[in-house]
Amino acid sequence: MKKILVTGSNGLIGGEVVDYFAKKNVNVFGIDNNMRADFFGSSGDTSWNLKRLQEKHKNYSHQNIDIRDRHKIKNLIQNLAPDAIIHTAAQPSHDLAASRPYDDFDVNCVGTMNLLESTREYSTDIPFVHLSTNKVYGDAPNKLNLIEMEKRWDYADKKFFNGINENFTIDNSTHSIFGASKVGADIMVQEYGKYFGMPTCALRGGCLTGPTHGGVELHGFISYLIKCNMTENKYYIFGYKGKQVRDNIHSYDVVRFIEEFITNPKSGEVYNLGGGRENSTSILEAFDLIERITGKKMIYEYQGENRVGDHICYISDLSKMKNHYKNWSITKNLESTFEEIAQSWEQRIKSDI
Image (cartoon, rainbow, N blue to C red; front, side, top):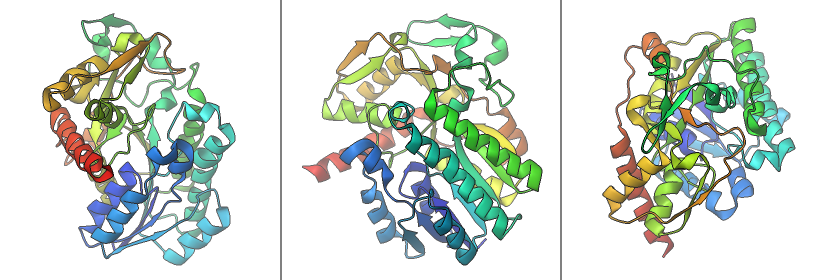
């Protein structure tokens, strides 16, 4: 593999993809129009990460292209002729989507369609990896029987001890507007694989995180929580007593799986991508962990109303991933991930002073 295209290359996963493959002497081409600055304001601006990547890698090229621009996307893929496409660009907030539904759908669903069809017109043989989300399941996981523990919710049925697998229903649930737009993209990625025989996969991510995660309120759970702790700003808990559970995966391990898929691709596959039970945490448990690392107490306020479509307990079952790609496993545990993010925020906070 000599050349790859990465969408959303300024973001957490896109930037990690750039770092990972550029170090392997692959020519990496990224597109990102920094729309997060529009979505989230200055706290969502990713231009700092673009600057970091350009200074670090001579074999990285970047263009400011919007994936909604069908003509530019088609010309880009035809002229670039990549060996693989990793699509990480998205409108990532299910809270923001409700106030900007056209933007959300056009970026998440139409943008993905533009990339898929432009890829098909260029070649049906190159791997196409799409970063989907566990929000495609909507709030269906909340209908499972749960048990309340001291600081977390958990599944009552032992059948779900390892988490939610890819056969779990996506129907008869509230997805949020964001989740619905991602369902459309997710299904289309699978369909282009099944119908046209293209090597595609949708990665239904749990909480993807890492040291380059921007971390803004209501998006970037761990990064934002750690940022609040270190800057001594108030963190707001929305419902479920702060015991809601997420499994967390380091961006490095995400990209390692992407490499496995590109090396040995399959058509129209879907994988639940997360940290698994071993790397799951509730908000209250996350408070305990970051307080232990930084020595600072969390400042927080509890809001009784939960977010629409929010999961009470979500853990990714990694069995299918590990079965299909036996060389892949989690290499970065929850505590080391917290430590890396804390170190990153310490540096970023100092640079802002």
